[in-house]
Length: 250
Ligand SMILES: C[S@@+](CC[C@H](N)C(=O)[O-])C[C@H]1O[C@@H](n2cnc3c(N)ncnc32)[C@H](O)[C@@H]1O
Image (cartoon, rainbow, N blue to C red):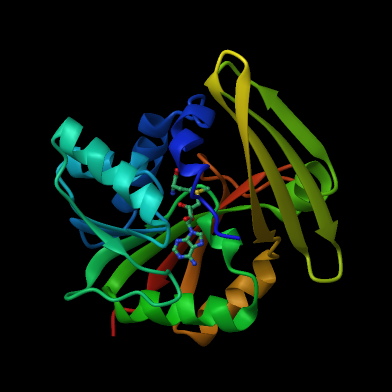
């Protein structure tokens, strides 16, 4: 079953409480920590372009990639509407291909948790290394092990809205640390009729030590692990962990 297809068209509505301006402010603060200026950025798993379009409007040269054509189409429409110049690419993050390397690669709002095993994570790391300038940054956030195992895992959530309602059932396997999300949507067609559609998503809960090993194996070095939107170590109840990683200068 494909992901971010029917859901793509409601993604922004269901994310309306997320403050993307603040998220981009935080990313820019991370960029500012680098000793060489960041002017070119690739966003992997860019979704509907909420971050990429904003970065382009702030003057960066932006490439943005996702594997969902529906998410990309929405991102492109929004870019056109707001006059943001972003080069959108239909690419899986396990196979990143750019014509020229960039200063920074970002992955925002837990896209990296969709990578479910070490082999695939290594493909992502290799792609990052090969498409990043020496001294460049890789900044990504992940849903924490705590959030996936304790908050999302094996719980059911629901939302009842005027146009769209959903039930979100989750099953967490502590052996694989993979959580399966069964999403059932009910989309209003007319006053008395709702269309039902379903998607299954899978995310893996990673531990910092294991990310460090996978990155290091691919010549990428963690220079900061923070509770998201801060520059402090993630505390026990941290739900989103921000990684800042550097490609060596040589
Ligand atoms: C939670 S959304 C985040 C979207 C966006 N970054 C944001 O901040 O709103 C996750 C995105 O990851 C994308 N994705 C998941 N696995 C992927 C993969 N292997 N390669 C590229 N994109 C992927 C999905 O299509 C989806 O757009």
